[in-house]
Length: 200
Image (cartoon, rainbow, N blue to C red; front, side, top):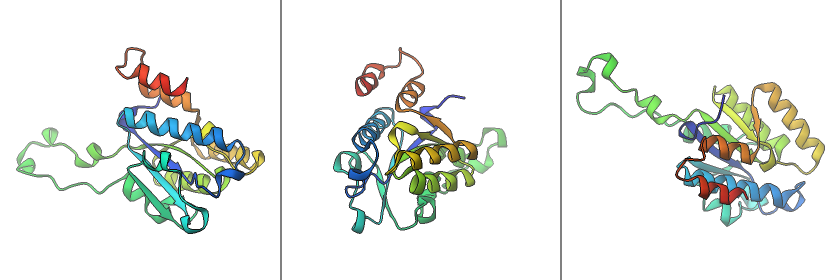
């Protein structure tokens, strides 16, 4: 199973100013998050951000925040508890016109047209906010793909323990380049060179 850009949404969890200086491999992790957001924007994949208690931990850096459609301020460690799912899975709009008069096989499902069920997830700390958000999204029957080189914790051990638990819970573990090339699928993609420039 490969990622599909048309079925994906990107969620970037808590790359906050007071947290990132103590994160293991923090600068590289943040750089990959920005790459992911820029690639998503190029390929018209929705991008969402979260910030844990921003009054205490600060906000996400402007270069990341500006690439997000919206940023959720939260107090729960798992962002789904503070409303993230409502952004990822908006309620279906009522059908307009005389759609009900059409035979069932010609009617369009508004829910399936709106929903992108694959959530590409990255963030900090991997063993707390990222983990709890991912597990909540899996409980909501969304497909969760965790971008390991855009995630970290204060310690390598905590980060790796999170990845082990996420894999056991059914999340797919990928890297930034895997996401890029799966979203593109072919070197003939019209945005291939633009995306390639971001990961070189």
